[in-house]
Each structure stands twice: as C-alpha cells, then as structure tokens.
Amino acid sequence: MKSIVFIRHAKSSWEYQLPDEKRPLNKRGLFDAEFMSSLDIVKSFQPQAVFCSTAKRTRQTCELFLKNAISTETEVHYSDQLYDFSGAGLEAFINAIDPRLSNVFIFGHNNALTSIVNHKGDQYIVNIPTCGVVKINFDTIDWKDCTDGIVEYKLFPKNLNP
Image (cartoon, rainbow, N blue to C red):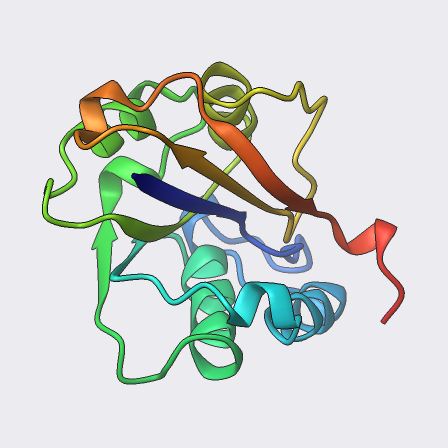
C-alpha cells in the first residue's frame, strides 16, 4: 500500500516584483497554512518522507506543516522537479520515489497537482485551491504502479471553518 498527501502551496504574494519561484506567502496564505496544518486529520498522517518544490511559497507552506502537523526534525527533500505546472515532472518524480517508502507528503503547484490527482485518483477535482490537501491511497507495492487510487480525503480551506 502506498499513500500520498498532495498539498498545494498556500496563497502567495504578488506585492513585490520578484521572479515566480521567489514569491513568498501573503497574509492569507500564512493563515491558511497554519489552519490547514493544525487539522487533526492532517496530523494523523505521519509521512516517512516529505518532498517539496524549491519555490519559496512551497517551502514556506511546508515549514508550517512541519511545525504544526509533522515535526520540525523531519528531513525535507527539495526538488526542482516538483517546480512543475504541467504534471510531467511530478509524474516522473512519483515514479522514482524509493520503493521502501509507503507514506509521503508532496508539496507542489497547480496545474500539476490537480492533473495528477485526477489522473491517479477516483474522484474528479476541478481545481485544488491554494493550501488544498488531497490524500490518495494506492493498493500497490511499487510507485510506478500508482494508478486507480482511492481519494481518502480532500480538504480545502474555503470549505472549512477556522
């Protein structure tokens, strides 16, 4: 059995003229990341590995989840391959995850996350919003065979009351 919790970065700031990968979270993004990472259902899933895009907004989102839901001592593996918007890089990344791992968190970007979740899961999601969390379980032993997954939960900030 393999499980992935996909987390889209929280809302980022457009206030500064920065390259895309250097944009930080805005006030709403910081609030949503704090709130979503404090949910018991998110805290109940203890990943064996955490993977994160190298973009600043995903790193900041990841740091808040580590602080509130996982552990600040958990090693995060940052990858440029997760700074992906189409889904091709994310798909290749998932296929190459160490087969000894069964439970992982992946912090990334749209449209890649929505595309992969719809391709691999059993529920169609129009759009994973900023700071959205989707957990998918796969009845397989190899990451390359992660298809026909079952969406265990999808949590979106706008659908929850903080």
